[in-house]
Amino acid sequence: MPDACAHWTLPRIVGFERAAWLLLTGTRVRGREAVELGLALRALPAAAVLPAALEIARDVADHTAPLSVAVTKRLLWQSPSLDRQEVERFEIELHHHLLGSPDASEGAAAWLERRLPRWTRSLARDWPAWPARTRDP
View 1 (cartoon, one colour):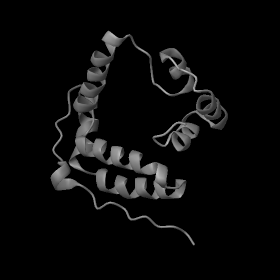
View 2 (cartoon, helix red, strand yellow):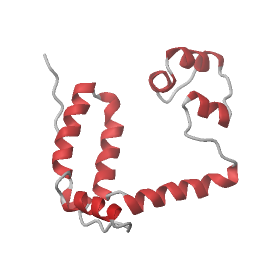
View 3 (cartoon, helix red, strand yellow):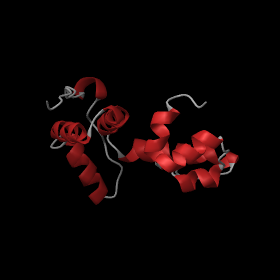
View 4 (cartoon, helix red, strand yellow):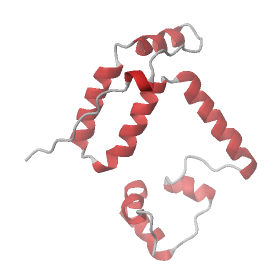
């Protein structure tokens, strides 16, 4: 029997029918098929995995504001426990905190000037008050 919340996660990634097939048959899925099913972004030879991961990490580090990345990651990981309206409300509240900041204008300016941005906001200093969950009665 699969574990690690596979019964909850897998249907949300691949759909119920494919999740049932994977969970009930225990079918071994290789790289290309994992991509086709939506379980992986791409399949690479083993020697290419670390260089590809470092390339993605460098792109994120160079081109996205650290505070925006951190807020996005937290909301992404929290989103499975939220309904659509809650995610939308969180996004709006968090956008209000991020937009209009020096980093927001710096990102646009750096892109227009074809240079790397110089981020100034800090996770420790500028972390937003996290929106509270609310449920409609």
